Amino acid sequence: MPAQIEPFHAMAISRLAHQLKAEGRSIIHMEFGQPSTGAPQAAITRAHEVLDTDGMGYFDSIPLKTRLAQHYRDSYNVTVTPDQFILTCGASPALVLALSSTFSPKDRIALARPGYVAYRNVLKALDLVPVEIACGSETRFQLTAAQIAALNPAPAGVIIASPANPTGTIIDAAELQAIVTVCRERGIQIISDEIYHGLSYASPAHSILEFEPEALVINSFSKFFSMVGWRLGWLLTSRSHAARASAFAGNMFLTAPTLSQHAALVALDSQDELRSHVKVYAENRRLLLAALPSLGLNAIAPPDGAFYIYANIAHLTDDSLQFCETLLRDTGVATAPGIDFDPVDGKHFFRISFAASTDQILDAIARLKPWFAKISP
Ligand SMILES: Cc1ncc(COP(=O)(O)O)c(C=O)c1O
Image 1 (cartoon, rainbow, N blue to C red):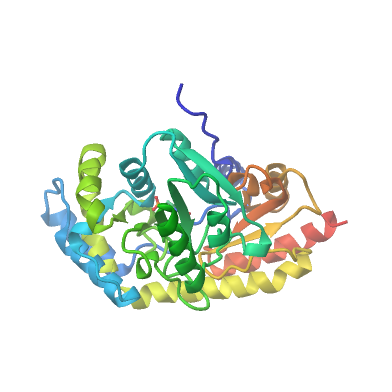
Image 2 (image 1 turned 120 degrees about the vertical axis):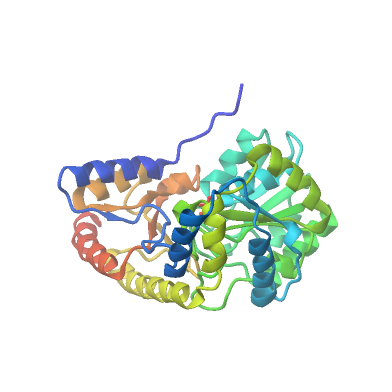
């Protein structure tokens, strides 16, 4: 029997939000982490040109991989070669590819709880065993080297994410180095999800490749590059793993979308426009952080990056899904229940995405204030 996989409960909230909208209600979508902005203008222009001139067969863009290699040199001072990149339909298949080409069935893979819902579920689907480590506010909801060192027996792999979903917290350079040291000593393969790189509000996040060239990195054009629906991402393999991962990718997925590869090449050079989005998220974050205490939400993870706030609502509910549904029905503000990210403690948390426009964030705050005042003890 294949593994039993939990649904993504935020989808149910989103469906309800769309239903309420169809009934005429005004809805603010804060349940998913997707930019409200579209692809960079130059990428859209390039896509139009390609549509008019290219038959669009299977395509595996060497210029894009070469440009990505330069991106790693510029951003992290890391040298990688174009053949280490495997282009995928977003970070989601890059995760499947990294796991399936690296581990054997029943291998144990450590990960933080709370964490992105797909890690746990994809591991189960691939007959791997998630070893979820409870990470609370004392570790800023992130895995630490000490926690990995304490696992007995050592897992075959570990998934880290910095900035993380649902918390936005970042693992600093010293801790990344310590994680690498422990994983080398114990023979643990690191998979690093760097999809929220580019979206940080203090200092930029470090890539694991600055410390460990044997780590596997997944990333995507969905978040910083604002190209969710273009479905394009990458697995950056180590040199030793590149041929094996590429054989898996060719058989499992063939190639990534041709149009998106052409557009993404241009998006990589649209930094000014993309950075202007980050300014909007920074302002949204500032407004929400200022407003949360007046909602009685004082226990939150410090959102160093990404566009999420993960807030403790234990004083208000033991059922985060019901909480998010009532919040949506009463105010029109859609959010994600903590149970998506943490099957144990997530009943006491909800996640707010601030990837919306600043006007929407202001509107949401105005709706949330009286609602929380009404329900707060
Ligand atoms: C942490 C994390 N990793 C991976 C993904 C998958 O993104 P995509 O497949 O759109 O690149 C997401 C999506 O929200 C995410 O939050």
